[in-house]
Length: 274
Image (tube, rainbow, N blue to C red; front, side, top):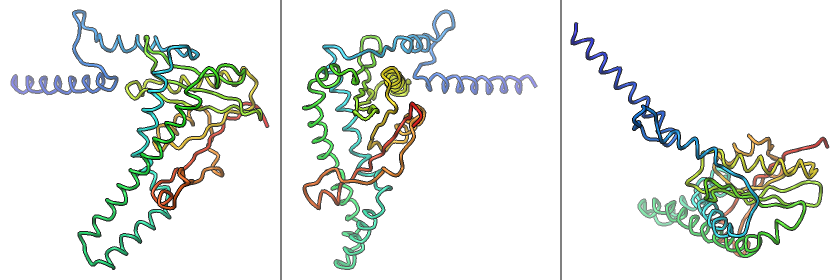
């Protein structure tokens, strides 16, 4: 009887430890306690959250802003190459016909099995090429002189999110001269995602738009990840389905059109009654 009780206590203790570890790891903390029985990493994490500041762009922010933008865009290449296929049934049908045609012409099963891999490899290559060109274009235009493009017009602004002393996110807004503002250049350092930073940046844009009398905020994105779309909807944006379309990011050749297409999503947040 005594042995059975002891085994039950040990089992319950192990379950409690596993539950505690799962809870601490979910917030990025370790389970080691200090001398008072507290969790120092959890307390420090909460304090860091309180130190998040959204401020306007300042001299000296150029390099971290450029780095965050570059990282955020370049990570889209695999998504644009692979995940985007689910929104491109015609392209999938074309790839299927190519694969079947290879089998019919060559009769080689091995070669036919290689065709999908070759097609996906070409998609990744052209995706990477197109996205790199886009990054260079943006870095050489508005992000090359942020004060000129965003800080000198009353309907435009550029903010950075600062955690402690580190720039960890960015967002901009610009006047479209039709009564609406465009939210753009939103990106968060991958190391600091999942902490509500993007949502805080979005709220800052909304506050700015309301204060400046804009009737609506619009945004366009080619993001494939669901988290990005969930963020926009949680801020109150509504997807304008009629404007969502599959377009080609490269216009120079049919080969590039075949291997790289982007689906553009358009969102709108109405601030005043139309």
